[in-house]
Length: 269
Ligand code: KIV
Ligand code: NA
Image (tube, rainbow, N blue to C red; front, side, top):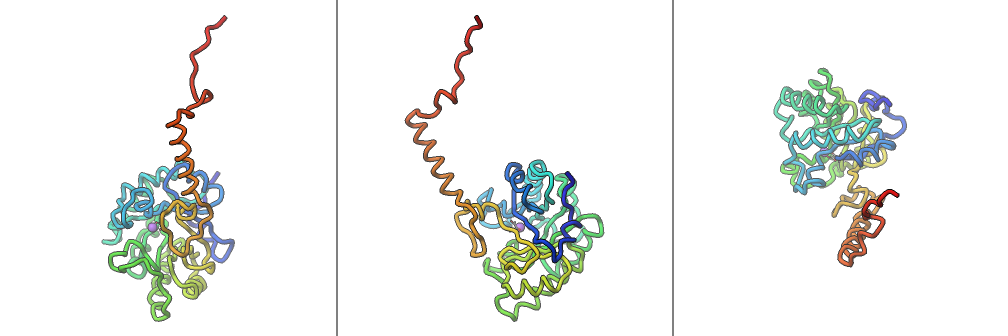
C-alpha cells in the first residue's frame, strides 16, 4: 500500500476531516494505521514515555528512535515527527540539518515545528528543499518557560491579530497543514476560513479541518488531561486490575497453570 503523503494531506483542505493521533511505538502505530490519516510522533513522548516535566528536554535522538519504531509499525498513514526544542529555532540551516536527519534516519513523510511569524522563513527554507513541514501555533508547549502556563490562547479578542498573523505566515511559507492548539473556537474558525492549508485542531473546536489528540490521553492512561481531551477508553483502571489479578495469582501460585507450562517430552513408542 502507498502511504498518504504530505501533498495528499494538504489537498484535504475543506474536505473530509483529517484524523490524527500520536504514537511513539510500533504496536500502537499498527493499531492507528487503519484509522488515521496522520500518525504524529509528538515530542509529548517526553512526558508520556519518559516522565519529563515538559517537552523542553526532548532530544533529536529521542524523536528519531521513536519515529523509526512508528514507521516500522505502520504502512499507510502519513508519519510526521516533531522537531524537538533546540533543534531548529536558531536558523533555517540548523533546522534543515535536524529535519534532514529525521527524514533520512526514520523515512517519515513530514516534520512538525512550533512557531508562527518567527518560523516562517524556516518553514519556507525546508519546504523548498524537499522537507514537508506541518506548523504548530496557538499554545505551543515548547515555549512553556516564556508563556508561563499551558492556558488556552485567543479567548481575548485582543490576542487574535498576533495568532492570525502566525497562521497566515506559516501557511504562506508552504506548510502542508497547521496544528492549532488550545485556541478559542471563534479564532480557530476564523483562521480555518482564512488560510488555504488544512488546520488540525487540538483543543481548537470542530471548526478545524481535522483533529489530533495524544493517544494516551484519549485512552485514559494519562494521570491528568486538559479540558479539551475526550477519554474514549479508561485503560488506566483496566491495566491496574489486570496487574492486581496477576500479582494475586503469582503469590497464590495459581499462575502459571498447566496450560502455561512446558511438560517433559513423552518418549516415542
Ligand atoms: O507532541 C504532541 O503530542 C503534539 C500534539 C499534541 C499536537 O504536538
Ligand atoms: Na509536540
